Structures are given as structure tokens and as C-alpha cells.
Length: 184
Image (cartoon, rainbow, N blue to C red; front, side, top):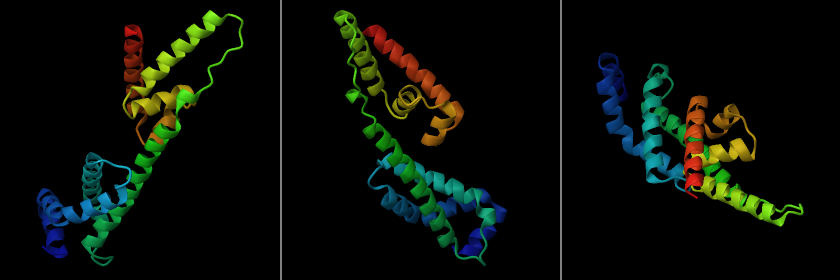
């Protein structure tokens, strides 16, 4: 189908037009995303980003005009922009995880009570192990929240999540940590 036919189909049946756009441009969008995310993403991330791009295309179809260019160029521009945003988000999460090695934190204590110091170090080690055993993004949320003292709102901005999602994941992560520490 050409661009005129797709636009006409979009005005008649947006659902059918959406399916036609995916069928016609799915491989192009997937290739753009895979090319941009090849160093920091797994296949599921590429597929998620590709799906998000088609949602974005569908939301912005009212902004598309044949006088501005072709549908292929319109979709490609959205795909490139979204893939770059996803790359930044994914590489930042990976960098935070890689750079935040709390295992190198200095836990030395100058107090006279050696037994207390050893117990504190063991407790801290257990907490650190529990945090590091969490999956992403929970691990990053807990690290930002308690290691860097960021607010929920700041964490949401850093991790490109909603405030509510960060709160829920933080709560669940803390419960998991508590269960792990109770088990020893």
C-alpha cells in the first residue's frame, strides 16, 4: 500500500491501518532499533522498543502529512529517536549497575569493640549481598534510595519510570531483602 492508501485506511479503520503499518514497516523499525541497541540490549528490549515505536507512530498519525514527507521517513524518524532514548535509558541502567559496586565500600571501624565491629561488618555484608541479588530495576532503585539518598521522584527521573512504579518496586524490594535477611 502507498502512503495515500494507508492514510485513507487510517480514517476509515485505524485498527486495520495500524496492522498494515506494522506489516509494511515492521522489519524496517526492528532493524533500526536493533542497530541502535545492539551493544546494551537483549532481544526482549529490542522487541519492546519496537512495539513502543508503533504505539508512538499510531499516537502521532494526526501529525503526519504527505506535504512534510513520506510515511517511511516519518516512521523512521520516530524509530531512531525512540531507539536512541531507549539506548540512553538502558546504557544508564547498565552503567549504574556496573559502577555502583558497593562491595568496595569501606566498612572499617575504629571502635575498640572488635566483636561489635565484626558483627556490624557481617550485617552490612548480608545487606549488601541481599541488595546485589535483586534484579533490575529494583537493585538500582534500592541503591539510589539508600546509597545515594535520592528521592523517589529523582529515582523515577533517572530510571525513566513513574513515581508510583518506583514506590511499588522499592516496597517489594525491601520486603524481599527483609525475607532474605531473616533466612540468614
